[in-house]
Length: 170
Image 1: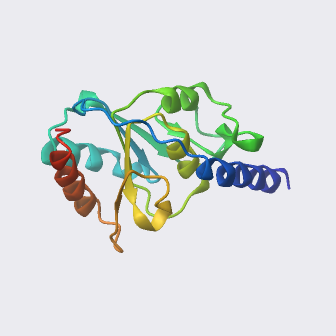
Image 2: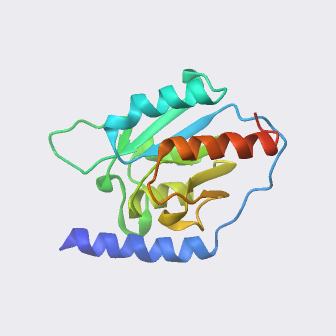
Image 3: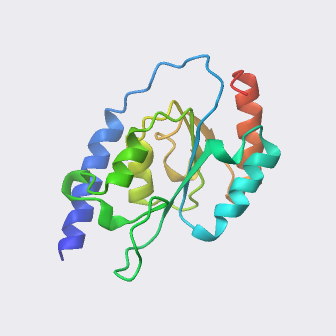
């Protein structure tokens, strides 16, 4: 019962914030710090290797943050967040989540393949300069939107490389 109320409260806050979304003024800085949002922890190593092989990023430049369902058995980690890290009205309860959102990443890549209120909220609250993701999620969240019905990470990486080259970011 409480989780339904909390989720409805977060959804309401999300709807208000997405309308008021403030876009950062673009800079001419090269991409040095990359944030990656995932909803499947089995893809962490695959995504990191793809980014380091296909794009000119080093493993040290990439920070991966993964959403997973809350379980009392799992320990709190700086690599994962869950619905339990959010309070009512989308307040952030976890210090790890607050730090991730406040961090000034040059690029945030959202690899989530289905609409998820919590990953969308993190994307929306993130201070990243440039945000990239799939169009089918919520294209209002992203500066660069890639439309691919299969949600293929390779296609997203290819488009990221293309647009970062055009924007002279890599």
